[in-house]
Each structure stands twice: as C-alpha cells, then as structure tokens.
Image (cartoon, rainbow, N blue to C red):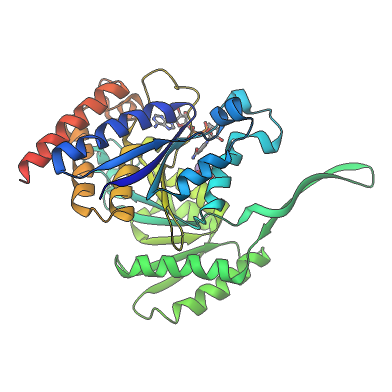
Length: 365
Ligand code: NAD
Ligand code: IPM
Ligand code: MN
C-alpha cells in the first residue's frame, strides 16, 4: 500500500530543498516499485502570511492522518519582529508537541569523501559515528511561565525549565535502547553541578541504567561535553540530553561532518507519525539563490524511509546516492569552501543524486 507523507516545505531554503527531495522520492515508484503519495501543508512564515497562524489546524490534521511528515525549515527576517505567538518557530514547536515527538535523533557520521577537507584534523574526525538523542517536547522550550514582567518597577523576564520524571525517563530509555543496537555506550549530558532539573536527570539516568547492564553509562557536564565534541568526538556513541543542550550541541557537532547542510534528523513519538527534517534552519542569507545544500534534507528523507516505513534497503540506496555524489566532487558552496571544489548549484547536486540513485539501483539488481 502507498505510504502517505505530509510535506511541509516552510520558509527560505526549506522550499528549494523539499521540492528537490520530493522529485527524487517520486522516482521510488519507477526505480523500486515503492509508492508514496504526497500532500502539502502550510507551516511557519508562509502559514502566518496566508492564515495568520504559524500552525493552522488543517496542517495538524494532515500530519496526524499521514504515515510521516517531511519538513524543510521555518523562519526568516520577515517575521523576526512578530509577537511570540505569530513567529514561524511557534509552528515548528507546535507540531512537535501536537504529534508528541519527544525523541529527536540527530546522527553525526564522518563522511569519507569529506574527511580530508574537514576544518578539524583528519585524525580527529575520521572515526566519528555518534547519535545525539535530544529531548524535544519539554525543558526550557515549553516550561511555563515564559514571560516578561515587572518586578519592583523594573523590567524582568522568566523562562522555565520544566520536566516530569516520566519525560526524563522515556528519553533516557530511548537512548539506552538505541545504544543497545550500536556500540553500547550512553553519555548523559547535563548541568548537574548547578541545575535542579539536571540533578533529577542524573538520578533517573542511573536508575534506567540498571535495566541495561549491557550498556555503559557515563555522565558529562554540558560545558565539558561541548569541548570533548571537538577534542575527541570518536569517544561518543549515543549522547542523550535535554532540549536546549541538544539544540546547541547538534549544530556544533554538524561541523564534524563538514557542514550544517549535511545533518539530518528524525523526531519520533511513542506511537503515530514521525517528523523528518534537517537540523539546519531556513538560511535566509542564501534562500532563493539555488545555493542550498540539499543533502541534510535528502538524508532526512532516507531516515523517513527507514524509521517510518521500514524500507531499509531503499534508505540505504538513497544514502549511497548522496555519498557517491560527494565522491564525484559535486557539492554546494558550504562544502566547496572546505574541499576547494568548484561550488555547484542546488539543482546540479540534485540532478547528480538522481543519476547516482539510478546507478545504485542498477548495481544492486
Ligand atoms: P540556519 O541553520 O538557517 O543557518 C546558519 C548558517 O548555515 C547560515 O550561514 C546558512 O547559510 C548556513 N546553512 C544552513 N543550512 C544550509 C544548507 N542546507 N546549505 C548551505 N548552507 C546552509 O540558522 P540561522 O541563520 O541561525 O537561522 C535562520 C532562521 O532559521 C531563523 O529564523 C531560525 O529560527 C530558523 N531555524 C529554523 C530551523 C528549523 O526549521 N528546523 C532550525 C534552525 C533555525
Ligand atoms: C532546530 C531549531 C529549532 C529548535 C528552532 C527553529 C525552534 O533550531 O530544530 O534545531 O530550537 O529546536
Ligand atoms: Mn537548532
């Protein structure tokens, strides 16, 4: 039976990279005999412009009725001065919450074609294979109150870092489950020397670890973790952490691959459709210029094939097509800057991925 995908291109480069990715996924019927139907929805700035709402009700319904959601990116300077509830980012946070997407998986892997041109030493990045498991529906992003107020006549502001024990436990369990089928090591990242929420996080991590005697647990404070990611990133297998720490550490970790434009993600719930999106944002500085790297989006689509549909073979082939494209030297400017290659346009990269995918399919027949 055909799989149904809700497509939310969003804003900025989201539009360009989603369009190209759908074009490639449409080949799946032709090349692999796998059928996917696509239905489009509004989110972010475009939804504000058309519906005065960053997450219209019909978008939520479309996502709930689909097998998976593919999202580009949201945001841009046009909406930066909007009031909080009319910001594009609200749409993204809203759909994560509405679908219960508590587990955000952000894999970071050394890519052979890019290792020698990393801004870090080859020896540091060559064996990188880590997975950031970011809690996505709690913490500072969602805690109440979050508001400006007046205290003794002075302007003040508060954000709240709130978690229930159950929320902490389920994300840590997810991390341990994932580590079990990898190299069996969990690094729990917190700020337990200061934050009460982190003290509880650490307690829960130790409790959960009892159920996974085959997995090694270590604790790292987040500032040290940020340093270790650059010093010796190959020490990590699965990193589990709260929402904001995971947001920051994953942009940092993206540079281990060569560019933020390479990092995909999968956001999963306890049951129901997952959402697949690149780690990067709408990149307003290059939007509409045919310069965006579409690879994080393509690799997010590969995660969708694997996690949402269980199409491991097809996911693998799409990944191979991306890696072969890099090996052939075709890449956008974000990578060309480090590989000294001639920068190719988004369209040229997509055309090469399309060609490589056909070749990979032919080879494995
Ligand atoms: P960004 O990730 O959009 O861009 C950071 C830098 O990386 C920019 O120089 C950009 O050109 C570059 N870059 C990002 N993706 C790229 C790609 N695929 N190819 C080539 N270069 C790429 O972060 P930002 O500039 O801090 O934020 C811009 C907007 O995006 C903001 O409104 C922010 O809220 C939003 N944002 C959205 C998401 C999301 O939708 N998931 C994620 C992060 C930021
Ligand atoms: C991400 C983004 C979002 C986040 C923003 C746009 C709300 O940075 O997906 O990493 O902070 O989660
Ligand atoms: Mn981010």
